[in-house]
Structure formats: C-alpha cells, structure tokens
Image (tube, rainbow, N blue to C red):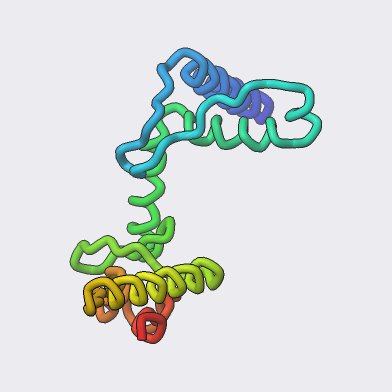
Length: 164
C-alpha cells in the first residue's frame, strides 16, 4: 500500500517535470516582461571558455529563471499566498492595507550618491555662470512620501536626511 502511494507520487512528480521541461522547450520565449518592466535574459551562447569560467552556467540559470513556463502566473500565486499569510513586504514592494504598492528604498549606493552630488555641483557651477540661476528639485521616492502608510518598523532609508 505504501509503495503504491510512493510510486504514484513519483510518477506525478516525474510527469510534472517532463511537462514543464517540454513547455520550456516548445513555448515561445519572451524578450520583455511587461509586469516587471525589464528585458528578460536572452539564451547565452555556449563556449568552453564561458563554461569553464562559470559565466555560461550563471547566464543560463538567469535565462531559465526568466523563461520558466507560466512565470507570471507563479509569481502572482506566490504574491497572493504571501498576502494571505499576512506578509506585507514581498519582492522589495510593501503592500499597504488600502492597496498601495510601494517599492522599498532599503540601501544607498554611496559611490553613486557621491557621483550624483558631484554632477549636481558641476551643473550648479555651469548654470550659475551662464544664466546666473540654478534651481533643482530633488524628489523623494514614494516610500518617503507615503511613510505613514508603511509604518515605523519597515526597513526604509531616511531619504529626507539624504536629500538635505
């Protein structure tokens, strides 16, 4: 009795693997994801040099992840399950009680931050010399503007301090 259940479970699992593999091979590949607003990883070209350096396997893993059959459906199911379990932070996005979806700003790239400040200083110098005027508006992200919707214990960078 126990072995019949085990054989049935193994057969179902094997059928699922074969079905998903065939779907991956036969379904057309998308180049762009509208849901994620990004280009998906294209199929990498094989070379022994890339294989032995590890570059090919890394790129192929990204390609398979991006091209997984019915990927959008699986992501939607995962997000709904997270919400049903009471999780509010999923995939770097905080979902508020009233339906706002706010991308979290959890870390600062100090190198890029410094470069941007330098670019602003250069622009200020240039435009003050040419036009005797320079105005700029630094806009925080939704995570800063809608801070009260996220809550105090959310991992969010204090952007008001950065912008000051």
